[in-house]
Image (spheres, rainbow, N blue to C red):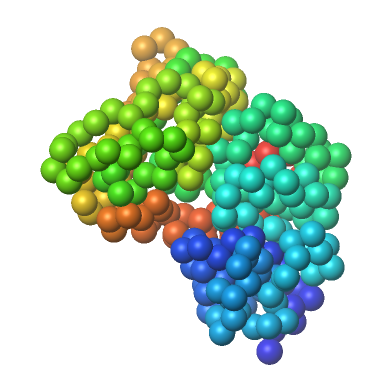
Length: 278
């Protein structure tokens, strides 16, 4: 049996597809990776029964401090980041799976300050963003001039506020739903644009208001999501990447993103009081 005192204790907040994947992988491979579960929380605890050991189920999220987590991973909804993010950082490193929440300028500032104050790391997973560290390096060198991300999915894969896509029909083809700043886009599609939010954090000099986001509904995309990133630097430098992420109809998250989250979690060993793209 592994000595859990030498392992990193992980609290999982949310038990949707991604939360379930992380819990199951920690249960299966955690010992070899140096990870163990501190707790699992879900708004509906009935979903956890039979899959998560009773002693690991956290009934009230406000009682998370009693479980001694080294890192807390949010994989449910931006509102949890707003309500508990600063509290999480007071006692653990925090990996925010809904970085679209950070488009709220006040919350972004609050969490950054909490990270510095408590010496904890606010981790932002790359998710479906390809080349995030390269964008960050360009940003840090002062030569990043522009960044735009276009995300195209089947309409069943979008979760949008309002009625932006309430009238879609199979076979209608391609429809541009929004083009503008990522700051404006995040509240409209909080569950769909975390890739863009991660990019805005990597491109800190541009921020959420300076990074351009575009979402496109395309009924032809029945097997994957497409993420296109265009980076512009100084003196004519530019890079364009196109990422095809396999995904079933109706899936918010592409299949390759699950492995990406696991890789990000393995990085969360503590990087001081700051924001860290992982």
